[in-house]
Figure 1 (spheres, rainbow, N blue to C red):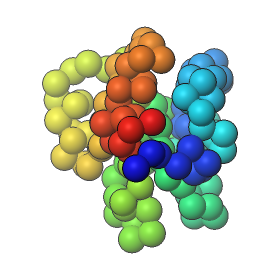
Figure 2 (cartoon, rainbow, N blue to C red):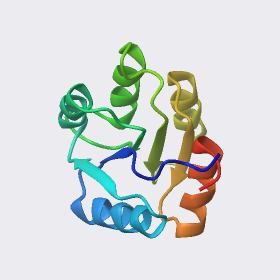
Figure 3 (cartoon, rainbow, N blue to C red):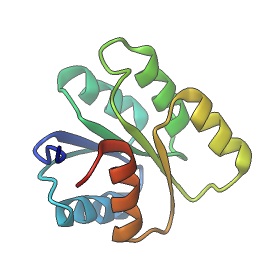
Length: 128
């Protein structure tokens, strides 16, 4: 069954350029309802008020990191099953392990291409 590209997608990154890049790539893949947040705290507020089908979050943010956001999302009954993809320049094994243990669905290393993002999304959501 094809992915519902009208689902709400939340992009979380403290770097506006990265938000623009990810938004553009998602739009190229056919997603049209994309919200963004500059930090984990704002993302949690958005998640409380709206239903999302996917969260793409940067790792390195203040005051709440992507890993802390992931843990908060997984700890909440309403949001715990939302597919969550971590987007980061961090390639340290311990970070990947920590994200996996916290319940991340997939991991995208920056910089990445449209093809890589599509592959990661397909692995998490199903055929795009």
